[in-house]
Amino acid sequence: MRRNYIVIAFLLIGSFSFGQEGQFSQYFASSSILNPAFTGTIPNLSFNTNYKRGGDKSQESFLELMQVTFTYPFKKTTSKDFQTGGAGITFFQEKRGFQGIYNSKKVLLTGAYAMRLSRLKNESIIFGLQGGIVEHRIDGSSLTWGSQWNKYIGHDNALTGEEVGSNPIVYPTFNFGVIYTIYDNENRYVRDRSLIVGLSADNLNRPKVSFDGFEGARKSLLLKGFVSSKLPLTARWYMHPSAYVLYSQGNTQINGGLYVSTFINSAKSKTAVQLQLGSWYRLEDSIIVLAGFEIENLKIGFSFDLNTQSFDINQELGGNLPTYEVSLTYNLDLTSPLRNISSPIF
Image (cartoon, rainbow, N blue to C red; front, top):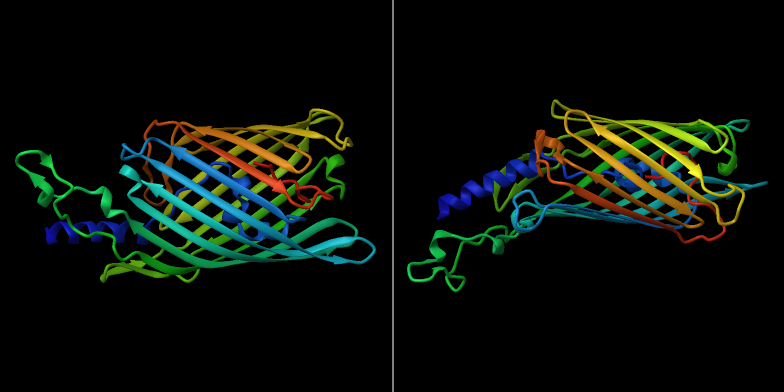
């Protein structure tokens, strides 16, 4: 039995040391995870959450992700308000595997500083630093052992099994990101063209993780880059071509996306409704379809993908199992819009 315990421990070390956590499909709706610098672009106190699920707990391919973020902006007031940065806190949880046996949680604090590059142009660069605590745990109560076999009734919960995962893996993590953005008009409702580019690195401190006293390995550096632009199609329709690339340990994931957006009623209306539709193609892996809307201080998105991938080892978690995700953002400052930059809202 001890041998089985050792095997499981080493498997967990490999999984948590070399792997990255699961990914949300609505990249821009989970912006604090996409790039810490996004915290410096949200111009008001806001609440944001994502929930993603694929499969059932009775399946080995089960995956469940959730994040909640609160963001507070920093502003400088002269002749008009100018955002100088922001701060945020993010709570993240992931469950995966049979009965959600693998459980990961983290709490991240983020600070961002925004610098305007030109007074004549709406051009800025934003730096973001993120740090927090990560916990990995295996729920041993979901496992069955040979020592729990009863020759009369089969598996017997009354018999004692092995204690696995009693000591979780806990370590600090630090991430850094930078964003460059430029757009043609300060008023987002009449803005026709924009460009946003971001680079970030996760696990800067390369923490060494171990399980129940067994020697572990260091977390690998995860590099991420994205670009997105807004271009007019007609008087009220816009397109947002986008790309997102991740690299870690010799593995590269490439994502290409295209959104279209429009205001259903007048953009100048106090109850202007923005509708956005789009899709992402994850190279050699999956197609993600997204739809959502933004009205006043509320933003809701829904996405659906036919395939999910654990980026760290290029291994499918769900095969062809459909995966869905919902997101919600609420602006707690009712006097200002949700965003002052023009990335896709989902």
